[in-house]
Amino acid sequence: MTIAVIRFGGSNCDRDSVQALESMGFDAELVWHADGLPEDTTGIMLPGGFSYGDYLRAGAMAARSPIMGEVREAAADGTPVLGVCNGAQIGCESSLTPGAFTTNESARFQCEHVHLRVENAETPWTSRYGEGDVIELPIAHGEGRYEIPDDRLDELEAEGRILFKYCNEDGEVTPEANPNGSKHAVAGVTGECDHVAVMMPHPERASLEDLGRTDGQPVLSGFAD
Amino acid sequence: MTAFTATVTVRLKRGVLDPEAETTQRSLERLGFELDDLRSADVFELDLEAGDADGAADRAEEMAERLLANPTIHDYTVEVARAE
Image (cartoon, rainbow over all chains, first blue to last red; front, side, top):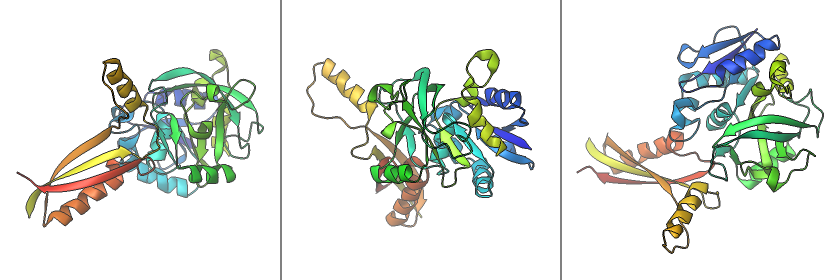
């Protein structure tokens, strides 16, 4: 099995993602977008970065690249897909997942550690946590504010499609703990099926024991399901 | 076929926070200007050939739907004029 980590022009978390996945025992491969998905792809990661220089909107160009048609088909066939940061923006721009990630409320690029509360522990990406667990992951984004019409967000909440919410270290979702002004403090959501998910915080940057915290490993372990 | 210029204006939907516009407004106010609100928009001018203005507008609209705007957060308008 091979997890394809798709590299677009401007991706910059692609090698980190491969390294994190390999350190956990996964077979992971960098895939240049123009080369298409390898035949033995059993998982797909859309890594962070600034694909196409964030032209037009973050993720807009990559979302319309031909490989994303293959990603959509693979997702529909049950292949797990995880988009992180710019990969999350690409996921929403390509309608793999609902909503949009847009300019932070602060209008600034924010690079810091945040706390996240696990909202639904019954998805592949969260099943190794417990519901309500508080984890710490890094964020690094200028366009991470989750936006979606209120009625759609209520539906997502009711359907258990919110993976994580920004919270304080005690697990309380407060305006102060919301780093980018995301609606309902949403940090990650699933697509129509929960094997497709996107999140702005970086699990792959908190997965190597040599670098400290490994709170992100359980997210990446979702590729094993 | 006739040459047209389609102007697609993409705006955030009313009610969607626009931190860049707010920052721009604050800067204008710091310069001493008085204003009640500021909204920003992206404008795309598309030169294209079409049988008539409706055909040009349809094509520009499809471009807006599929790339230029994100329907989750944006509204857009299309105006078509014969190219000079």
